[in-house]
Length: 205
Image (cartoon, rainbow, N blue to C red):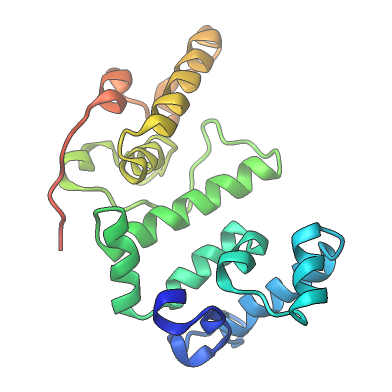
């Protein structure tokens, strides 16, 4: 967005699609208002104070993004033009229809975890769009955690962050293997092998 529209191009609604919330309010104005509110809440943070004092409250997007919630990031992606969504999706070697659904699924899981709510054996509202190779893990009418893990794996591309996450997750599952049923979270019996696969996928259109 910065390269195409300038450092503060995210503030201009003309750079985005005109999408409304359920209450009929502009999604873009809601995002900007949330960002401004967070600036006020974080006014004593050194980088916020610096931009308030030295730059009269002007925040380039690479700074502003630090004050965006995960939900706001998701909303921002949803109102980007198709061309801009495609440019971002290509960074993850995928298409917008995949990336958009992955983000929504991860926002839901993030919110459940952040509020210390139950994730185990709970149906999820958001369904991450999976590649044909992973369709069998969709889990029918009940959305569970495992498809979201496949989305994370796909986004990180088997890099060191994914490997570290997978190792920690396997250790956690092994520790509590006597009290959890992995199928309740949509895990197949060969889940360790599936999450360790180093496949190269074609970009679907």
